[in-house]
Length: 158
Image 1 (cartoon, rainbow, N blue to C red):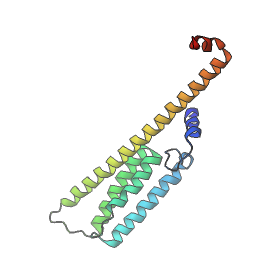
Image 2: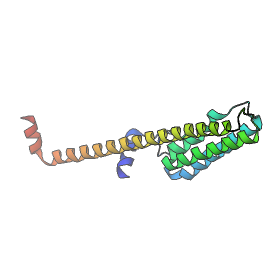
Image 3: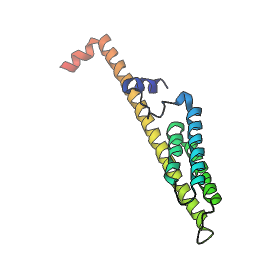
Image 4: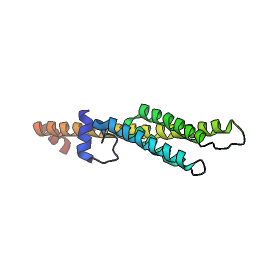
């Protein structure tokens, strides 16, 4: 964790950074769940003709980015269930009874894909910053070693 902190002091904090809410992960997850509840309610109240499908990605994205893979997958599944319940309770007419299950499956796959993609990008960003921090620490150690031992500089100049 020491290396991650060093990288953040070099790059600076950004609100989009995956660790910006690390101490407040529960708050981020609750915010995501509250947004999902609001979207589910609006989707139900407005009926099946006014689609809110795209807005279900917001809580999935928040959970995957600030929480990680497990939280993102959990939120994706909950979003799929909420969309299904909202669609079922609005009595959306389908020409075949099994179409609602196909729709739910396709939306769940979309949510899971988004969740897994964002959590992977999150992991890559954190890994990149850890590598940067290690590189900077090694560079500082090398500079200290060079300052304490003048022979390296003499050999490098030859």
